Length: 459
Ligand code: NAD
Ligand code: MG
Image (cartoon, rainbow, N blue to C red; front, side, top):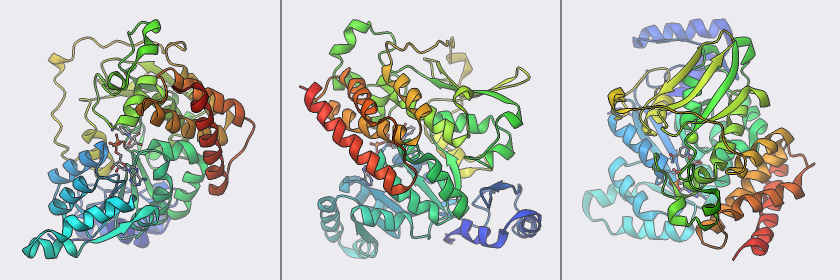
């Protein structure tokens, strides 16, 4: 297989802006015999499907997690379109080693230095030709190593699948390269919103949503809005509402009086989706939907009244867009993240994801209801934080990360999560955060406040 590094970069360099560039790109497209071509603006970049000139190099940030491994599965189904340039993870050396053996990337990174030592020892233990090949893969270490890999500019596509705020700096490094960014790491967007999209505009990077709801909304929007994420004009396109659906999590029907006794094992056992531990707890509190509400506001440039949240327990509809004329477009499918990952990676083409089509004879009844504030206080704290602005959404995310970590370590009760977030938001309101330094300062302050609240409320 011929490896074509930075296919998108080449394309963007050739494209420039506006009509002249569209014409030159159209000529290039005819040369390579692409079946589909379009050009339009997202920031200053031209979007078209990335694999036209041969396989695209992909860097997966968060490669060993649930989204990272699903991305690997999509790549396995499309060896003629993608190859793995880089893999980054936190501390799971064993899983990263297995992926190195399979995909033979050019570089890998682990943020945990102890895990990097373990990985090096595993590589050194392999004999023969395979050992020689594995030792030629560069191992980068620490946050700097992850950022260096994310920002090395050798991948046309970067998958943002690190969990939590740890993903922000690597994502900003990747955005600067002008690559296509397939974004799963919603926390990074929640904590940086406008700054994130200002960087996108500067570099001409392409943002494609991976979160299933945002992928669904994206798929229900007209192409000119798809091309202009972060800056699109919903009402100009006749959109009256984005309807963000959520399953309601595992405690949707639990008696309110039983929520105090929710254990970690109960909370991470999501009825529909199989996910990492942090997002599983977020789904149980519906903080996940709060983060997604904020994510939707930034991605689709939506006002507070342009996004409604609907509980849809079956998770067959992944979200909807309601238009001024009364039409509602919905995207349906099996609850499998490989579909939105493949949509983001393949856009503008539909590629194989390995997901079986939905069998409508097995779907049964679809139901919908409004979320109950008493059951889901985190959801309403998130919506409120979003009206207050960037400092509050940064603090919301930081406080929640600390509270969820404490819950997973059994230092805080399930109901304590919303109490910690509420306490932090009360102390941080009225602040502003625009630059990266200000955002990181609010993040650090909110974490300190959260730790104090956990010590007070915890067990
Ligand atoms: P996960 O816990 O399964 O995986 C997290 C990945 O991040 C792992 O590879 C881990 O090694 C890596 N990581 C952690 N800390 C790191 C650090 N400091 N530096 C580098 N890498 C680090 O999580 P997940 O469920 O795959 O979720 C990943 C992201 O995708 C989250 O932001 C989540 O909200 C989002 N998301 C997940 C799903 C899902 O179905 N799993 C759906 C939508 C969005
Ligand atoms: Mg989601």
